Length: 146
Image 1 (cartoon, rainbow, N blue to C red):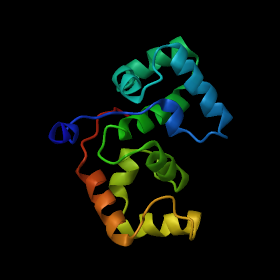
Image 2 (cartoon, rainbow, N blue to C red):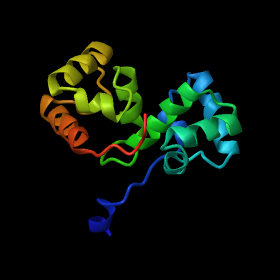
Image 3 (cartoon, helix red, strand yellow):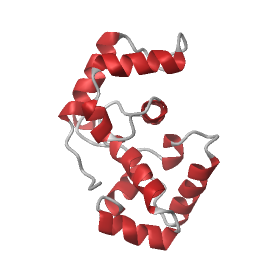
Image 4 (tube, helix red, strand yellow):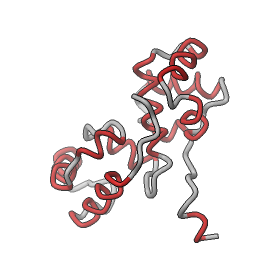
């Protein structure tokens, strides 16, 4: 099974991808749950294109811009080692989606993490680990239409 797991995206519950104190986004997530889209892979499947997001926005009442933000978070869950915490960290330091992470350099990413978290880094963010993380993001293929 371990050989298979490295190829399968597991996704995450959308609640895990948004800070708990971000009440506006938590309300949007609640609406997604009501529409059976509370799991990231379900939202990614339903909202990959602009047309799909326009329809979802009308159905759920979630404005288009926050909906795109949530779909971008959902998109990252399909990538290796991208947990809810990693996605929240990426957003907190200004990398909002795969396209932003693809433009990052390891030094920029590391510097932003240090500036935001200081000695309380949320992960083992040595410069070597950041280099591997940024390299994985650069290799990833985009799935969503922005």
